[in-house]
Image 1 (tube, rainbow, N blue to C red):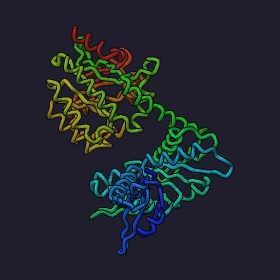
Image 2 (cartoon, rainbow, N blue to C red):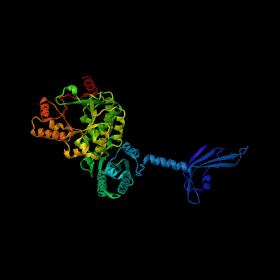
Image 3 (cartoon, rainbow, N blue to C red):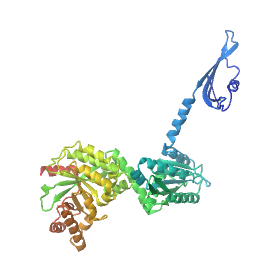
Image 4 (spheres, one colour):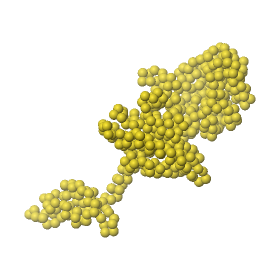
Length: 510
């Protein structure tokens, strides 16, 4: 069989047949992807196969023609191809197709005339619309924003939705000055835009991260990472602005370094290089054998099996929304340890990120983990920072209320360093106040710090809460806290952090 590839857009069947060679010596000839037009104007995609008929003497006596209607198959193929490269909600190209376009430009060496600019766009207030008016409203907002964006860029520019409220824009054959002008127009348009849903009106904003292509531009991953870092800087600066990535900018380098930590943390998660440490919390005046809780601390081991300081990777995990993933790992591993502990003698205290409180499914995940452990009252404490709890007040209240039904307790960590509003304590079912170490460490020499710690301790006790002082690093500090009447202490004067198994074994034998 011989294949003849042809696209016959408006040909009649007779014209199609005329295109078939007069004789093929008995071979079948197949025309694929031909399009036939009917008299009513409709078109059908067909596969046409023709075979010549010969008699015993080899003379031509006719032809056999087979037409196969493949209109549905071709339409399905086009639809699948479209869905694989486009976002279903907005109709914009998706991340995969956008990255393919960027890769194409990277692989073509830049000339003096070639100028391209990559942009990341992140919407402000999208979560507010979703949370207050529902996902249907959020979807409607994204569609309207998409129409605004499409009206302001050239047809040749690549506009993509990367997911959620994140978009990307590739200005191909465009200098930085023109790209900045267009980006500023988009920022102004979105800032003035008002999204109306039922009885509510929302103001929307956006932040842009901009990366010009240069002959020294790196890989696809590095370009996207640079644009993302610049976008986060624009958001941190207040939003409704753009930030151009400059490799010699110290703050930009710091932010880019944080993003590298995200990659390293993700790799550590998948290669089992995270480890739980612990630090004891004990009652003032009680012997070490009476340690009540072990606070769970997260550590990471690098590629050389060296312990990495949490101050190196946790800020990056928090900023780039990896904290809920880490919290899930910590909760699951901690409860596995708690399952084998004499819970009448010892409990554990787990820190949670504010981002986890608002993370979809996190509460149910914790509840599922608790089902696997025989709980006893007060054996499990969850620690939330003051700022995280107040910033996510409604989520925090729901989270705490549900888990307190299961016998869990809650500590408000770093109290005094955040918004410091005692009024919020009335609205949160808090059991323990952990006094921020920034006041504790200088309590012996600073009268204001002493008064601050005493004030927090007194209010906590009036409200029926226990108090814990952090950063207890000397006997003098311990004596001052005992004089004030703080209930529990934690710090290097008590014990330094160590692998949690070590503390569990030591306390269990005491």
